[in-house]
Image (cartoon, rainbow, N blue to C red):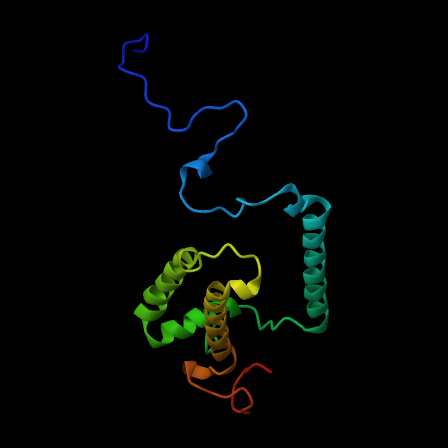
Length: 181
């Protein structure tokens, strides 16, 4: 009995040893990516990982700066509340969603975003592999690639193949008013 007479002491789940440390992974069945890890398998964060991240960031920044210098921004006349351009297009990253809303408000506004969110939530349960090589993670890579391709196709259709009144046009037709180059 405990001195405060609250009943018997709870049993120990794990035996206590001064030579071991226990964490939550000791209570969970299954394997962990760290089960067979040794210090030789580890890579230092500095300089290896941070230097690679810095190099990737600099490459992306250089590509963005080069694109900004080579291509002009497609600016139009200043916005006017009295006159709306036809078609009023969303920014490029939302054109895929606008394309879906064009067909059905329910599909583009509720169903597609809901399924995308549910797919992102379920992705860790569909791809349970702890492998680090891409060829061993085919499920996750294929699902994410399909998601990106679907978005890319919808964005390209909205940007290049929609004209006045959101009607289907070709980007090379001469009758596209204010069309993109």
